[in-house]
Image 1 (cartoon, rainbow over the protein chains, first blue to last red):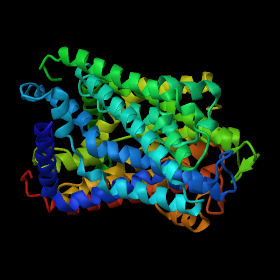
Image 2: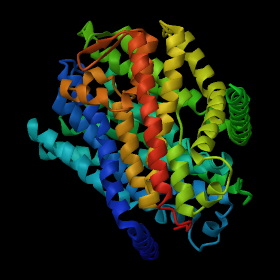
Image 3: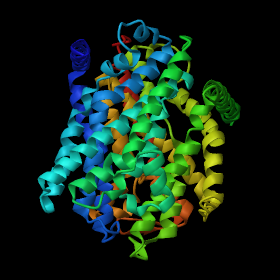
Length: 260
Length: 283
């Protein structure tokens, strides 16, 4: 374990060093990713400014939900989502073998070398939106914060499973950078309260593809709303993780080094 | 008189030659990208999924209101459906392509060719979007029309076609100008993202421009971005209004044509200026 942490830290240092070769571009990207992630909250504010609203959610509450969505996505981007691009580009070039001959698992190396410092700005932005919006409302109790942290861990598990599934897919679907769009479109359901969707879609995005766990349940916990629907989501998240790891293993075995 | 008779066939020959070049480059680009047609077909999944999210959002928002900013629920759905479809017809990546060529030094090979890079890039876009028309626009159009039952037949078909073509050109010119900044900045991923984000916000991709505060709407009226997507969408819907200015369809299409002409002139001048900074060395 210590060895893995050391490898991760070295990779992290390398990622920073590589990114700092174009410092101004790095800072520009940090700000821009933050601005682009702020787009959904901005659109929501414009909708609310017309006097319209999502039933059962005021503006501050919806900002907490979208701030948490931003936070979860940016933490995932920083820590492990770089593995998707890593796998995508190396499989396309036929150089993924370099990951496979290393004395640690290819999955770990893909994650460690995919560290993306650009997301730091968005983490700060996500935290700011969440905290500022939560402050407008009644401050959450200690128990609410603890419940939020627990559910947020499942949010990251769900995002990690998505990242593994996407990475696994590009072994077969070589060079398809539009895989991100598929992910973005599916997870876009998570930017809004579960209650606005039809019953069928609520079931799909909670108990088949755990999207609601990314922001809806953590936000509900922090806001002291009803989270009784979350319990059945826990095994779904765990099964989703197991499934993604199985798919990864299967797809990795099909890697041909051919490029594309 | 004699000079006039001599120059007319010469001009016609030049135009025919340019069209041949466009056809050849577009055909090669089409064939090149057709190898990745499944990538384009991702839109058949992504487009309707995004639309589904919009459908739920606006159904919830309209629950207590009959109309928002003068748009009914049906008009709002038509707006988003039309905007998504038009985006498949006008989308391009001239900015990314140009900055990559400059960054790697490959742009040098284009300077040596007997045609301008702008025209080459435009021809590439034509080929790429023909592919988009077949593998993205048509299937998603059928899904929107028959599954979501969105009324997608334009109110003024002729003006709608002209407006979409002008939007196609404006999108290309704006993106090309963003790519030209690489002559000075070399690596432009940051500035590209900023411009593309600004472009998408200001062209009404995410939300109709009528949702923005009036002062911003007025500023958007004079910027080139509304002519990319907002104007073609409103022309398809059959009414145009921005910042309190309501115009007839022929009027706004005329203004759009003038804006595209001005942008074309600016792009040519900006590109010439950028070329003077090119050293031929990759970074």
